[in-house]
Image (cartoon, rainbow, N blue to C red):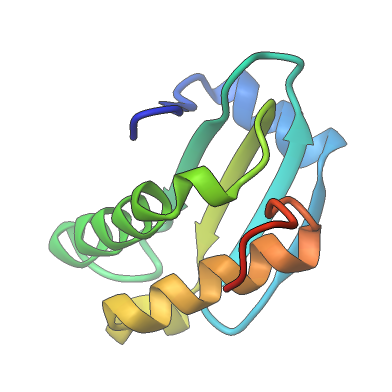
Amino acid sequence: MKFSESLKKNSYFQNVYKNGKSYANRYFVMYVLENNLAGNRLGISVSKKVGNSVIRHHITRLVREAYRLHEEMFNSGLDIVIIARVSAKNVSYHETERAILRLGNLHQILKSDTEC
């Protein structure tokens, strides 16, 4: 992630949950909150309900890679938290990528000069 850093502290996650706006689709829930910084911060949450550690880390890597490859499409200055739903257990990379871009489009945080 060239332009973004990870959202690590629980208090940052809680702030985004409390004050941010959320949209969901079949596989993920995305919360977005402006952070008044130059870059974005991305947080990924995958519950134990989704699966064991291998499955949870696999989903995390898929989400991080889908975001990383399309990072320049997202507006700057945002805290983004992506929560995986149980249905994301068997999701492919292309479905992950499509779901992340759709949620970004719903939040209207994709730059207007790019098309998805």
